[in-house]
Image 1 (cartoon, rainbow, N blue to C red):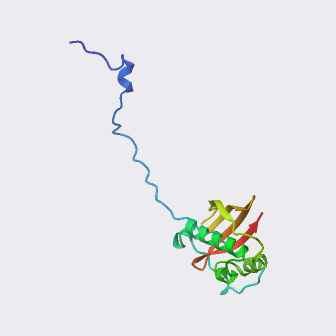
Image 2 (cartoon, rainbow, N blue to C red):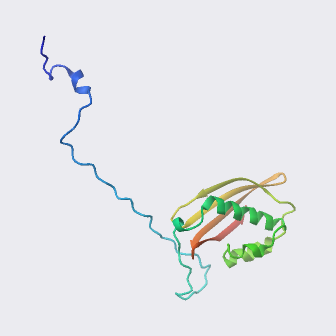
Image 3 (spheres, rainbow, N blue to C red):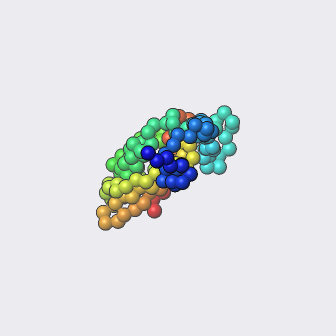
Length: 159
C-alpha cells in the first residue's frame, strides 16, 4: 500500500468537496413592484378627489384575455357591427369620442393576426395588434392604464 500526498496529485483537488466554512447564502426578500402610474387626464383640470386612482396590475383582470376582448370589440365597432356605447366604461372619454367618429369606417370585420404586449410599469400595458382588413394588414397600438380597479384604454390608434 502506497500513501500519496494530496498536494502531489492535482486530480484529487478537482473532486467536489463540502465547504463547511462558507458564508451563509444571502436570503433575498421578494418585494412587490412599486406603482409609479400617474393616470392620464388629457389636460383636464381635476380636483384631488376626482383624480383616477392608480391600481396595481395584480389586482386587475387577466391582461391578455381582457386585451383580446377589447380589440375584438373595437374591430366590430369599426366595422359598424357593435355599438360604441358598449365600450364606454373601457375607454377614457377622449378615446371614446375618437371611437365614435371611427364607427363604421371599415367595410368588413378585420381578422386579428397577432397581439404583442408589454408592461413597462406596474399598472400600464402597451399592446400592438396586427389586423387584416381584406388584402391590407394594419397595426393597432393601444395603451391601457389600471385605474379605479379596472383597465382603461387611454390610447388607441390604427396605423
